[in-house]
Image 1 (cartoon, rainbow, N blue to C red):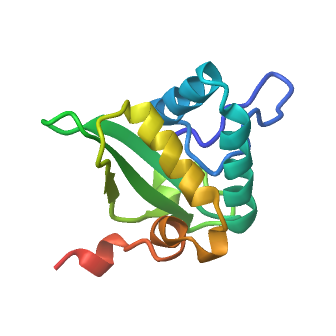
Image 2 (image 1 turned 90 degrees about the vertical axis):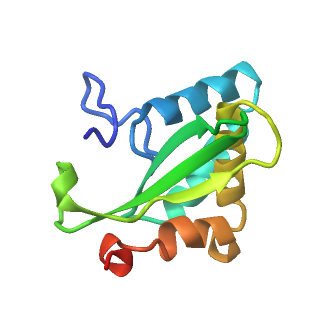
Length: 140
């Protein structure tokens, strides 16, 4: 599991609280192509400052009818300097389904933007970051 890409100067390129996944890269590419990267980056900064320890994993897809969905998981560190996936407490997936047929990347972009608005009073932020169900909370 890679948290953030590191360049040759050992500086973090993307300080986002989002894990480096194919989906987050596609969302960033989509936002650049559509001239909306500034809004995405501002939302990311709001999330970063409000959730210091938490890392967020996002996956995108479409259902059989062609409606996109986004799956979020929260990674909370068990140790001081987590390196591997086993160093995190991983939440159960939280799934958001679109009500319109748009690209999965656009839907993921919209969810991240929504998560970045007024993070302390935001339902998506609370569901994914603050109150994400732990695997042990749900498993019976």
